[in-house]
Amino acid sequence: MIKKMLYFLTDCCLFGLLSWQFNWPVLAQNQTGTTIALQHQVVNQTKQRTRFDVYDMSNLAAAHRQDPHYNQTLKTQAQTIQTIIQDQHLVLVDSQVTDALGQLVFHVPQAGDKTYLIVQRQPDTITQNGQTNQVLADPMVVKMADYVGLAQPALIQTKSTGLKRQPYFFKYGRTQNKGEIPLSAVGFVLYQRRQRQKYYLTQTGDWCQSTTPKQDSRVKKIVSDSQGLVILQDCQLPAGRYFFEEVQTQPNYLISSAARAIQLDVPVVADNTPLSPMRLNGEPLWQTAAGQLPNTVMTTAQPRVINAQKQATTQLPATGQAKAMMSLIGLTILVMSFVVLAGLYTKRGLNHEK
Image (tube, rainbow, N blue to C red):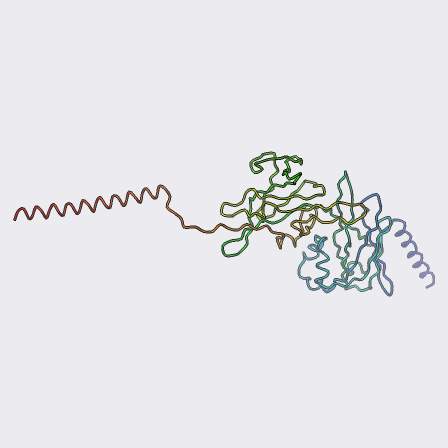
């Protein structure tokens, strides 16, 4: 019996040493709780510490047990996950900061039926080729039942997505019945003011003056898609104030004065400070993740720039229709005149015979 216990203790020690030697994130269990180890990707040379939070989402997972895609959907909501946490009243279980190697260990209650949500609290900031962007780890769902009884260490490693500040808005039309519908194929240009003069963004990323930006082939055109989305991609705007200008709309809609000067503010990027969002008409904008806007943005379609529908007018007959109508009236008058004259002639003939 004593020999078996010695073998068991020796195996445990060797397993722990191997885990420590190879930096394996492991799920260790004891009598009072469980530790979840996590390996985070170090995104730059500064080896910045990154804070992660773990929440108990057992009730939320149970409520969506029949939806096989729910957990996968959560993983795509890195920017808006805090809204879900607040709306669902998820309880914070632990919060830890990574070390210089990007590693940390969570301490959570031990229970096989628990499901935890691990999220990165703030994005990591990286600067490459003079451009500053952010990287945010995808939310991670950990089902404790998946790790019960495993003899090998469990690997929990973050997967990060690049974020970009790209200005966007949605082009909508307000119909006569006060409804709002997305407008596609509406054209915009971007300009900035320099000494009270307009300089338009060009196709090559430069700036030029133009008196006819709609027709000028040098000026970059941004066109709304089928959902009304207008987004400026593949262009890194320096800090400053810019304006979107609507230059072409749908035939039965009017371009408002507000649509000719949609204000965009790009804040200054400062070292060792959070990256502030762009603002459109004062409203903060979300960043794109792997080129995609958050689902909540696409669902709500905000912010919006509205065009009013033209008032319905009485349709006048076209020139060809008018000519045909006048000809018909003239022919009718001619026929009636002929009938009247024929009647008079016949009447005179009868009187003469008498």
